[in-house]
Amino acid sequence: MAEQRRIGFNWKLRTIMAQRNLWKTTELMPLLKARGINLSESQVYRLVTGTPERIPARTFAALCDILDCTPNDLFEPYVEMRAAATANAPKRSEDIGVVQPGDPIAHRVRLVPADEDE
Image: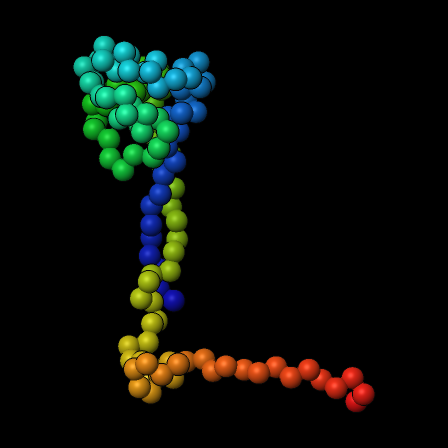
């Protein structure tokens, strides 16, 4: 089966903040503003509590400066190996036993209890 290389990452901002004794997202806002990063309360909350899909380089650099850490401390990439969605999939419905569209693949089975006398 063909495999597809996927990359994931762990976003560890909340953990690093806790190690630096920053417990609230509101404590991070003025530190970001002092470095020219103006984010709303909800944006900072999502940045801390969620996993961002994208983050501006200046914001990333400001977080590293505020928390006195490296990008590797905040962002930990890892490789996932997953099977490709179309790997070895049949091209035609006949290949999986469907003669006409709408025909069921599985059939109902009736289980009959065995006689205990035998």
